[in-house]
Image (cartoon, rainbow, N blue to C red; front, side, top):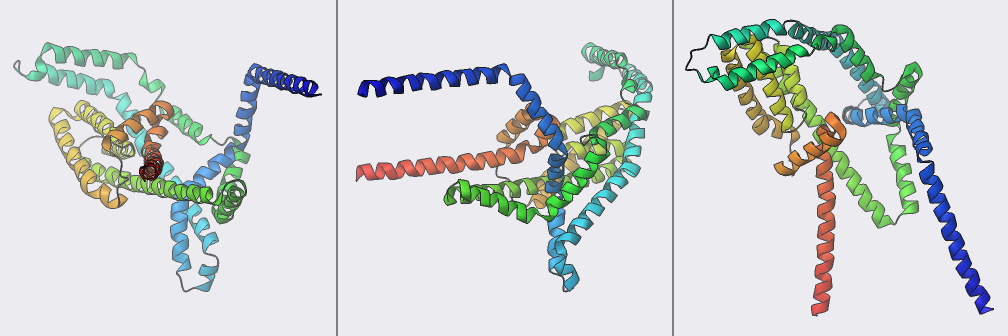
Length: 386
């Protein structure tokens, strides 16, 4: 009897192993189909994912407005604080988008098209200035001259107007907006984002309910703390960077306009936009602005512009930005540079922007884990020594 049970267990083991191998083989064999199913699923729910992102970004202004309404002595405003705050936030967002599309974007688009159209003329003027320099000038040596001419030849070979004309730019904007394709998807995205904002309390409570049902209470508490910390870090970083970039863009535009830099609004917009990316953004934007000013306004204006912008960037980095952010994210410059490089390499511009808060949260989790392990090890060693 024992031998029969032993043989039966042995055969059951081999049978289960064979079934598992077959299942793994079928899974690998049909991995393309499974990938297609997953992609289709994400395409279907993309309006809800977009809505969730919109709701997450609009949570900051909505919650601030809601708190103001709750402090009001007016009973009507108090009772309907959340609904009114969401409605007001959506209206303000739509008005801001309309303002950008109708006022700022046309100016920037016209500046880009004009710059590209007249680039050959600007470049010829730059070459003439370079040729008219004194023979003993450091910029007149053969290496610099060859580098400038080589750069000019490469630019000539690229038909930039093929990619940067009003029709193309309009197409790019439509493609960007086309994350939610079709009128129905856009409608679903807007409605879902509103409901995410309105019912955020219920959604969070339901997620907690699932967590407590599946995990230990202590684990749920720890996860909740990390979620709160993550939200705090992301909200602080995103809101502060947006405000800081807008201020930098406006101040730089005014400064460039005063010193007579051509395309001041375009360059101010570029510097403000790239300022969202820590470290690399400012360097890339200032370098690009110096190059454009050098071509359009000459060496002296480019140097003056560079000095003014670098001074403003230093004021921003040491005074304005810390005041807006408040407490530091407590992350070393080396880790910032590393995280921005990795984030940009894997996820592009969005990855560069979100790399710093993501690295901050990961560092916090790692620090807590190491502290826990070291504390546990120390307690264990003390018990052994006793």
